[in-house]
Structure formats: C-alpha cells, structure tokens
Length: 313
Image (cartoon, rainbow, N blue to C red; front, side):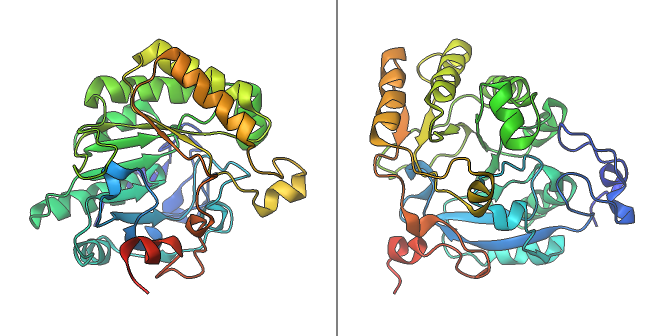
C-alpha cells in the first residue's frame, strides 16, 4: 500500500490545491487517492530512441494538473476515462508487456505516491527497463528531486513561453516560470538524453528530452520557447518540435485553435531552431499521423497507428 499522506493535503503539482483526496475531495486534476489508468500497452508514437522496433511500454494515467483545453488526451484530462488499478495489478500488467523498450508513465505527477511504489516494486522483481517520466513541464522541483532518484528519463514539455498564452490555455500565468525552472533542474540532475540516436536502433536509457508542440497562430510563442531553451541549455539540448496538433472538441466550443499548423508556421519554427544552432532536433514535417490521435474508449488499443507500426493486422 502506498503512503497516502501526500494526498491528504495535496500539493503534488504547482497548483497546490490542498484538498484531501483521501476524503473524496478533488483538486484541479480531478482525481482522488486511488490510482486510475486509462491504458497500458506498447506504443509507437514516441521519438525513435524511445520506441525502436518494440515500442514504448506506455501507461496513460487519468486526470491532469495542467488541463490545456486543446489536449489531444482530453478524454483523460477532462472526461476522466480510466479504471482504478492497484499497485500490484499495475506492476503485473507492465511486466506482461511483450519486449518493450522502456516503461513510459504519461501525465504522472498527480499519482506520484502510487507510481513511486510501482517503480520500486518493478525493481524488486528484477525489471531493469528505463523508466520514463512523460510530463507537462508544470512540475514542482521539490517533487522532481524525489522522482529523479528512481526515474531514468524525463520528457518534459515546454508548452508556453508567454504567460498570457498559458493563462488562456490552462488558466495559469506561472507555467513559463515553473516549467523553465523544472527543466533547468532536470538537465542539471540527469543531463541530456543519451544515447541520442535518430535511427532508433540504440535505446535511450537516461537523461532529458524537451518537447514543444507548435500551436496554430502562435509562432511567436514557439520562437520564444526555443530562445529560452537555448539561453538555458545551449544548442546540444535534445528537443522534439511537434506538429501533431489537431483541433479537439473544446477548440471548436471556444472558437480557438480550430485549424492545423500550416507549412509556413512550422517551417518558421524549424528555421529558428537551425539559426540558434540546435543540433539534436526531432521533427514532424507531415502534421503527425492521425492514427496516433487516441480514442481511450478502446483502452486495449487506443492508437490505431500502433497496429501498423508493430506489424499487427
């Protein structure tokens, strides 16, 4: 049984709601004191060093402390699809994954007490796969310090350099400062992602890769994100500049971000990355693959693209 104390006055994310999740109260993430999971499976929609030929052993958690209205995982962050799972059941399901390259915990911060025990139990049982902390960047350094003790790879987003854009998208102006501090800490503690292999033949086993999603009409934000990452870490920081944005239902309700990123917008961001001298850049020139937009109502197979990538029919 995990230590539930952190849930009793929850400050697991920078919102620090202070609710008692053990008493059924819900903070911004919308989750209580039971681990809830939407899907566990081999996933092929990540960067090559994380996927290779076997896939990433991805665990999609329910709820989110960030809550961006355009999230492609809105079924988890807003609709809270998922089922309660014990630590023991979660460990068993992870151990049963066939030949995956790593254990990839997606949006994990608000379930840290449970996931800490999951990781520790996997190690006790002899599982030596790298653990990936796949997070929004909106994380408390005090918690990251604990997580860095047992997590091998960190995949933080750096979504917004603009406080105004962060306020509009997730209701918090502090995202840029919080994420920048978090990424600085992680790079200092874990270093850059290594080995960095664009072919995917060599599996990454340690370090930090920063992701940034380009948003339609917000090129200036993306350029500022790159400027800040360059200022903090230099041109050898591994980054993933993503073009996979697709409008989700809330975008149309708000009449915001209702189109794809254009070729010209994406090209401008990549050109700026090149001008700054970034040398380790993953790109998505074709708007990503719509087969990797998930539908978590099909928990056993939320990504149609995984079947093609794994050779299944």
